[in-house]
Length: 192
Image (cartoon, rainbow, N blue to C red; front, side):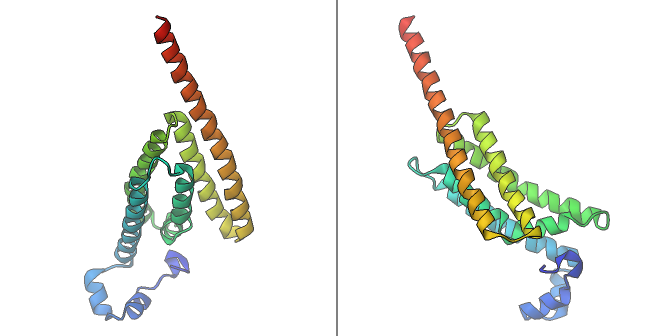
């Protein structure tokens, strides 16, 4: 998919996979079916890796750093780039674009929910946790789009480093306000 969907040639896949064109056509009769199956497999693998990371988080782990590592792995990995390429088909392939959206949402929405739950378990109220999740993903998506214009690793390093500082300060602020609120609630209960 280095040349995008339009430049993708099915016969080159058969050659690279060392299978006959007939065998490939038997399993994947169209270019679309081959590409969608490959995208499905990429999403399956990335979703499984994300779910394992989230499930394996311990209370002492830095959930924010884990979220940023997972976001970088997903957004800078092949599945997101391929999905973006296929979503950018314009009006030429509207049915294919819709199928890509379905695959993307099927896999990413449960992962986003799992990250939201992990952030809340780390002591964040739900609204700030949702804000952190949404902005983190937007930053990584934005960096991918910027790569199309200019692949600048220093920019990526600087941006992720600055976001890490900002998001940790934001999280600390909301965790401490949650603790302050809990202390005030207990104090009120003791007075009554």
